[in-house]
Length: 269
Image (cartoon, rainbow, N blue to C red; front, side, top):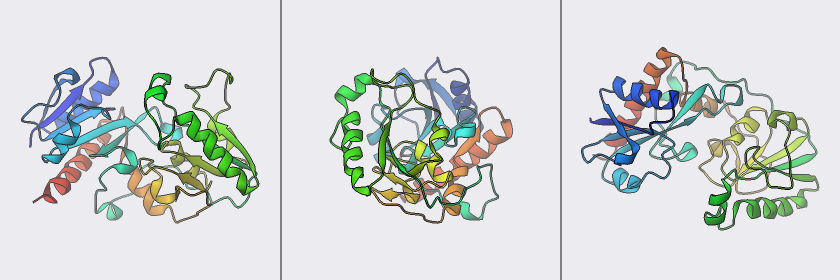
């Protein structure tokens, strides 16, 4: 199995993680600008959603290991997440994890029964992407406004939360995300990883696209409050998040990748 780490060359510790994972899997590295090597079986890289040739690579039996920031707010910038042949909620689901030891993860809070606010989380695409890329057939901010109007039928106060790094000109700042949880009746997202944290906090959540890592425990595209069991979901997700600075964690991450690749490639025989 030929493993190649695809590096940007300017991501510091993140490129370092790519190199160390490739080394643990007896692979090597190459710059992202070189594209996908012809003899590669597995490509590992940071934020490769728009990697040229990715679909063809996967169709011919290759596996792409997408790395990104972790899922849980408390450790978001100290951890990295792993997705296989699909980003976040669209990642290949590695089998057999239910019998594996517990991993670090936040404590699930009881599902909330009250709340007075429906919070619609606007997608955080950069401005230049907003002009060219549409979400569900509608530009991101338009999507948020339309869903907010639809949510008025619930009889609650509806507010749109814009990404703190992608605020429109008419908003100067937004409060920390966790400070908005107390009054929240329902959280609504298109595909944001923020849904992970509302679900952990016990806030019924709606996701409109399965790319959300919380897709399996959300109402899927309908403005409803659902409160499923979350124990298996968070256990599985914990096996996709690892500490950036702990060498022992890289070993576990490499084992997860190895098992996932074996299952994907084995399923094609």
